[in-house]
Image (cartoon, rainbow, N blue to C red):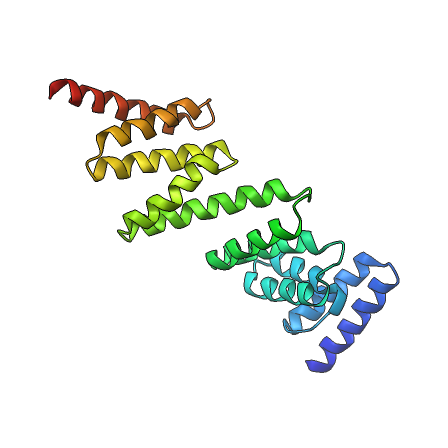
Length: 214
């Protein structure tokens, strides 16, 4: 098996270095079937893409990491960092994904991929806040959500964060704060999250009716 994978690796690298990309990828796929630990050097990002296609996200992440360690300043490094973050997400390594996306923002502030990275990062931060809230850590969740509610670039993330803050405020007995957050959801809602918008309107109605009854 070792000899076969070594032969296939050599053929893959020969083909790729000669510009025969399809042929090289074919040899690479065969080699990876025999051995998922092969080091393809400058072609490790390609190996990572193949493993992503196979839904072997652990191996994909390893190949992307290997590529970035060896070629941190290459022209394709930004795209590989995005792929690495996706692989981390798929295997449930949320904190690694967040750290990776933040590092991307520092390294590539002008990248054409920055909007995609921002969207992924903000959604992960929101998901982590939800998990923190589920663990009963209200203060920690509120702190993270307030940052997203006011500073997220994606309006949908701001809506979700404000709505969840409204729910937290209700649960902790701060009805005025709840109203403020729900009203912000209504203010932000422009048809992209209709269900959340309608829920916020319902909560405002109920809270205002309760105030009148007092």
